[in-house]
Length: 548
Image (cartoon, rainbow, N blue to C red; front, side, top):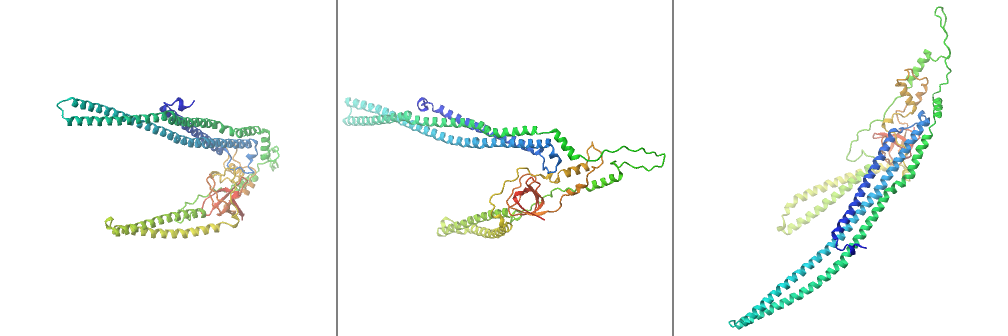
């Protein structure tokens, strides 16, 4: 069963049905788009949550890292972060395979539907025009027959009238003959028009429109099939990430099972065991006799030791310094405030724009010259003197643009020389930068905490908690080894370009010279300072480092 045979007279019904089908397709595309946005927002919130609770920069000697509960928590956060990545993959798959492809397919279907219905309306219009011509020929034939009959009666009446002259009778007969001839021609024309219309009508209902309806049926069935496949892509996108999500959940389970209370207790003992013997009994001091008191050797509270510990505690306070604020960038005309490669690109763009404007002005000048020549040869077309101001203005613009082109060309040469001078010979064979570290770089809030647990200990010594006493800790003399550097500890050269878009990072250009402020702590990030200002972390694999 097909539409061309069964629905030959339902043109409007098919028009509404196909439009409804396309509306449904667009509605599904919109639904999937909003579903992808929900997935994207969900993944973004998960990543933000993980970033909030994930340690900013865990040092190797950070005591918290040695506890199984902290390790499990970090592992759990990483699994949640991986889970968020899978939600992003679902959103990406839905956006590309469903939204983009189905939206494009919908546009193609709309164009095809429009073409078929335009073809059907043209066929209907042609048939209606043929019917109108048939009606016109029919009315003409009817009118000519009445006129012929009337002329015949008039001729017959005059022929029988004895008072009518022979000339009147002859004229009436000629008029009747002429009307009869016109009626015969109208009859033949009407018969031919009727035959033509019947042929066109048969072609319209049995061939032309069924073909159009069959094309619409094929289009609609293809749309339904594609929509069904789109429904399946919704579940397929989820099924593709199910194995990885299962591994993430399994990793969370393993992290939970790896918590070891006994081990954490042993770690705490190993970290904070003092090794001192317990204090002995205090001797009775009899103030009634003059006796020199000898304190217990094992006592911990000697004044001298206390003062030494306090002195050591005061010396252990390391200086803290945040990243210096970036200098306010002053935009210059030659773009010298930009890195060399960026400066070269911007100058090249400006030079191309000036050359296009210069070519446009020169073309306008030539057009004005030709117009002036035409005015001089044909004064009635215009006054040549009226073009002089525009020609002068164009010449001024050309001179100005030529000077700007020369200026930008000179700056471009200097920028290219700067790029070549900053790019070492060893950089030529690098074609693709390695992947940046997978761990997040430290942000500004954690940049000052570069000594791990040592700074934590210093903070605890400076701001004791309410549950502890005000006495400083026993061991503080070793904290002086962790003084943070206030000056560069070396220099480095950027092997690749890096766009510092994350918090705590800094951008750098290929071949740029940088000051080394802190070495890689094992997480793949190195802190550097740019010559034009700005400090932050960049991937260690993007640098060639030289220590002082």
